Structure formats: structure tokens, C-alpha cells
Image (cartoon, rainbow over the protein chains, first blue to last red):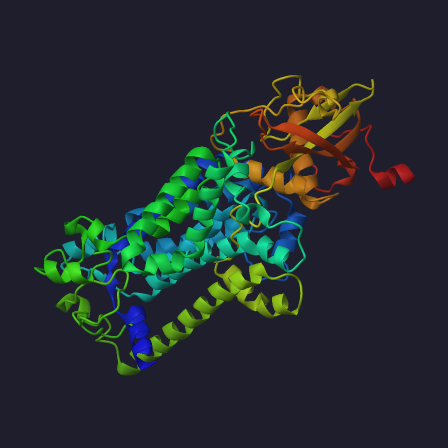
Length: 321
Length: 253
């Protein structure tokens, strides 16, 4: 018990290489910026006006009774909405380049949460992952590497340490583990309902039909040619995905399986992006992968201990070595 | 939290993501110049915060698995904690089922000369086989080829698709359905202002589209009428007046 406590204490308190957090910051900032520029700003007059697709009654209900909040009033003028979106875009850009990073991430968190609860009917899983990412970024020392802040500090002769507090990084890592694990449990829920007699089928995922149906959905398909996957391919792919999601926390924690886990996830999300129109979800979730990216997959000069002559020790201890 | 860490050169050290060899810079406590009490206070705050956040991330997910009842009520504060920090936990990702069909909204306009026009969802594409703006295209008795859902390359538009699908999946006269009608109808009237005077009836419909089958095509399978819409009865309507369509209570009067 004492050993476990000590291990956990070290996992949460020992400082970690700031490179992963910096890459996470850059990826999250860029994904939010592109999402704002491509999907939100051009359609703002449609999404955020009561005379268009914003339903004030629905959103008032969404906010009522929960701790959801937005600094934007539901009857916000279009001018205010555009100014808000521009502010978010500037904060996302500053976050990506690491300029006034702490302030930028706080503004981005407040800006994004206010936008999200302004019209929840247009949100998707990607928005929720990005929302969580801005909260965690706000807490991370993500500007210690690859940032204007770090460059400025170095010029003034007060460089940042390349090592950062671990706990915000760990929270983000746990967040991704829970996302995958619980989505697998949700997918297998019909099987439980069937076994307890409250449902008449084992569900698309347990039956291996999910991949076939997802590929045949004309609302989602990116390309105008649908094809039905042969059932045996669908079953193998469906079960592989749900098993991988269910075991993600264990697979990513074990050194031997970490690379495989990340590569499988990358391949899956690239496949989803190429075959389905699901906005920025693939990019937003893959941004979290950078927090798990093995140190020995990073260029050596990027690592925090790049100057140290400790290659054998690095090999022994670094992630995925 | 934030304490000077032990050296990780310990051969029995656990594998930790992001962990690397210790060094002077790494082991140096960046808050060494803080007063002792301030460091302790910070550690306690961070500890409590991490514990609360971890618990909420986990139990917020458990909440999403539960159904209405005392268990869900007990877990709601954790879900609320996540909502407040924008870390909401509800990961659908094609679960619990992918499904074999989708609903989309539509509006059927009837004019004073009894002609009709159908306004389709924005995420829908024109039918291959017949003119999708005609009411006949909603006839479920048509042959499968005539009910074929058009195929198109989709780049962008994922948010609108999601909104329309969500709107149409809910039954009845919902606020989100009225918002969709407001937008779709006012856009149409902006392009065809002459129609405003001639419309006598506005019906909100939903269309069921079956996923592609062996033929390689998706098909319209069902049409459902939900309610008649009257702009004059909608406080958020900002389009032109539609004088021949009256709100239900005005008709009763």
C-alpha cells in the first residue's frame, strides 16, 4: 500500500518533460482556430441568432438547473457574437504560438465555454473534447517549450525550466483514458440490457454490425458512393475498435503496448476523418495523443534533457523505450 | 504536489508517461523561494482540486451510463462540476447503437392556388430521380428507385447535419423544430418574397432515410407530419408577414 501511494505520489508530483504539453497546446490552439475560421465564423449569423437556428427556449432549458454558464446573453446581438468569435480566434492563435499563454488560455476557456452554451444543438464530440482541453491547458505550464513566451524569457536571460508540473498533464491523460473506456461501455450497454432481459437485441457493436452501418449512413458518408462492408470484415473491425477503446487505459499505460495503442488510434481517427463528415472530432481527440507521445519518438533536440549525456538511462526510463 | 521529486534513476521506478531521467534543472523546486506555509497551502489546494476533478471525470461518465432515478440524482453534482469547467462527459460516438436510418426535417408549403412546395433540410441533397421540391417526392408508394436518396461529396456542413438530425429525431412541436422552421422559411422568403402573400399552410414534417442497402443506395422510407406552423404565433419570427397563415389561437377566436 505504501509502495502504491509512493508510486502515485511520484506520478502526480514528479515534473515531466514540457515538450508534450507544448505540442498539445499548439495542436489544440490550431484545431480551435481552424474550427472557428472554417465552421463557426462563416455561419455565425445562422447559428447564434434567435431569428435563425438558435432556439432561446432550448438553450435556456439547457442552462437551467445545471452549472452550465455562458457570459453571452441568449439575445446577444450579431455584432457582439462576431466580436466574441474574433476574440476567441485571437486567443486560439496566441495559445498556438505561446504568446501571453496563461492569459490566452484563460480567455480561450471562457470564450469557448460561453460559445458552447450559446447553442448546444450544433455541438459534437469534438467540441466537448476541445472544451475540456482548454480547461486543462489553462492549468498546464504549456509555454515552457516552443513558445514566444519561452523565447522572450530566454532573451532576457531568465529561461523557463524545460520541466513542468505533472498534475495538469496527468488530468488530461486520465480524461482521454476515460473518454475511450466509457464510450466502449456505452456501446456494450445493449448487450447488458439484452442479458438482463430488458432489450431485444445485443446491439450493433456486440453483433459486429456497427462498422457496416456507420459506413452505409448517407448522412455521415464523406464520399458519394456507399458500399456495404462484408459482414466478416465489419465484425472484425467493430470488435477490434470496441475492445481497443475498452482496454485503452491499460494499453496506454503499459510500455509495451503504448506505441501500438497510439498508432491504432491514429489510423482509426484518420480513417474516420477520410470516410465521414464529423467536423473536427478526429483532430481534437488526436491532439490529446501528443500528451502520450513517447519521448523517443520526438527529435532528440526537442527533449528536455537534450543536452544531457544520458542516452542509456533515457532508453531505460523513457516512454516506449 | 510540486515537491522536489525523487531521482528516477531508481531501477525499480514505475513506468510513467513523460518521465525522463532526473537532472539538476528538473529536480530543482521552482517554488523554493516561496514561504513554507505558501508551498504547503498550494500543495493542499492542488491535491483537493486534482481529487475533485478526477472524481468528477470518473463519476460524470458513470452518470452518463445511468438512467433516471436516485443513482443518477446522486451523481448529478459531479456532472454539474464537469459542466461548469467545460469537461462534460457524455461520449456517444455511435453508441449504444449506430442505427439503420436517420430522420431529417422538412417543410411543406401550400399556396392559395393549392399548389405545394417542399423545403428540404440543408444537409440534404437534391434527389437524383425526381424534383425534390415537389410533394410527390414524399410519397412512400413510389418505387425504391424514385425514393433514392441523392449521394454527394460532403466537405463541411457537419454541424448543420448534426443540428438537423437532432431536431428531426425529437418528436412533436419542439423549440428546436420551430427554430429550424424559422430559419429555413425566412431564407426561402428572402429568395422568393412573392411567396409570403400566397402561403396558406406551413407544415413541419420529418423524413426517415434508410441507410444504404445492397443496391448501394439509401432510400426515403417514411414521412411524418408533426404540426402546422404559423409565423404570427412565434415570438422569434423576424421574416416577412405571412398574412394567410394564422396561429391556432387566432383561428379559434
